[in-house]
Amino acid sequence: MSLSIEDYARVARPEAVERLRQLARPLTGARVVHVNSTREGGGVAEILAKLVPFMNELGMHASWEVLVGERAFYDCTKRFHNGLQGHVVELPPALLRAYEQTNRDNLDRLDTTLREADFVFIHDPQPAPLLRLCGERRGRWFWRCHIDVSRPHRPVWKYLRPHVADYDASIFSLADFAQPLPHPQFIVPPSIDPLTDKNRELQDEEIRAVRARFGIDPDRPLVAQISRFDRFKDPVGVIRAWRLARRFLPDVQLVLAGGGASDDPEGAQVLADVQEAAAAEADCHVLLLPADAHRTINALQRTAAVVLQKSLREGFGLTVAEAMWKGRPVIGGNTGGIRLQIVNHHTGFLVDTPEGAALRLRYLMDREDLRHEMGEKARRFVRDHFLITRHLAEYLAMMVALRRGMSSRVSLS
Ligand code: UDP
Image (cartoon, rainbow, N blue to C red):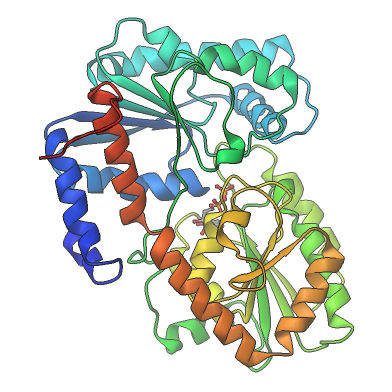
C-alpha cells in the first residue's frame, strides 16, 4: 500500500501536513539531490528512503545517489567515522588517496546531476569532497553530518574541515556537535516514519510468530537491543548488563539483533566478538538480520519489555525513537542524540556503564506499571518531536531560507 503525505495527518499533528505543503510551495520544481554511501543499513539510509519520495510528492524533483567504492575507501571512511566520534585513528596516505580517488570516480558519474541541482545534500564525510571537485555549480549545497563530532580526534577533523568548509551550510543533529565553520549551521535532529513497516502497528499473531521463529520463549520476558554490530553501540556491554541483572531476574531473555551496513567493514569482527561473549548463554539470542527485516525489528521492539541502546557515542540513534514510539521505555547510553530523546526518569533512563544499565533494568523489570507509564510518555515525546513531518518541514525551511539569502525573515506567501 503506498502512502501519501495526507496519511500523516492521522498520526502527527493535523496541521503538520498543511505546513509541509506551504513550505514546499516556493520549492516547486526544484531539483534536489541527496548523496550518501549506502542504500541500506544504518539510520541515514532509513531516513533517505522516506525523505526523497516525500520531496517528490511535494512537487520537487528529488533523487538519491549512492557512492560506489572499494574496500580501501570504506576502510578510510570508517576511520573518519571512528575518529570524528573521538577515537584515536591513523590515516595512512594510501587510504586518503583511495578516499579522494573514489570521490573523483563518482563525480565522473554524477557530474551533470550535481552541477544542475538546485539543492545538494551531502550526507556525512564519505562524499564530502564532491563539492570541491565539482567546480562550477548552480545550486546550494548542504553538508549533513549525522555523527557525533563534538570531540573529534583532531587530525581527522583537520583533514576533513577543508572539504566541508566551502559548503553553503551544514546541518548537525545536536547543538553540541556544531563546529567552527565559516557558514550557517542548522540543528536538525533526525526522525522516524510512523507508518512504515518498521514502525506501524502489528497484530499480536505476527509478534508471536517472530518470537517462535527465533526460538524465544513466549512466556518469559525479553529485553532487546537492535543495532548494527558496531563497537560504539557497545553490544558486549549490553550482555554484561543483562548478566548482572539476571542474578535477580533469572527469567529475562536478551535479544541482540542487527545486520551490517555495506559501508561498514568492521561489522563482521564485532559480530564475532558478540557471538563469543554470548556463546555460553542459552537465553541470549544474537540475531543477524537481512537488510529488509523491518517488520521483524518492529516485532522485536514491540515484544521487548524494555529496549536498550547502550551506545558509547551516538549521532542520534533512530532505534531509540523507534522503540519509544512503540511505547517502550528505553535504557540508553548517556551520549549524543540519545540524550535528546530520553528524558531521564521520564521517557527512559540514561546510563554510563553496564552496571548502571543493569540497575535500571532490574528497576524497570520489577515495575510493570511504571514501564507502561514511561512508555506512554515516550510515545508522546516522539510524536511531538521526532516524526518525519517535523524533519521534512525543517529541511524545507532551510532550503527556502538559503535560497532567499538567509534573511532573518522568510515569507512563504
Ligand atoms: N536497522 C535495521 N536493521 C538492523 C539494524 C538496524 O534496519 O539490523 C535500522 C534501525 O531500525 C534504525 C537504523 O537501522 O532504523 C539505525 O539507525 P541508528 O540511528 O539507530 O544507528 P546507525 O546505524 O545509523 O548508527
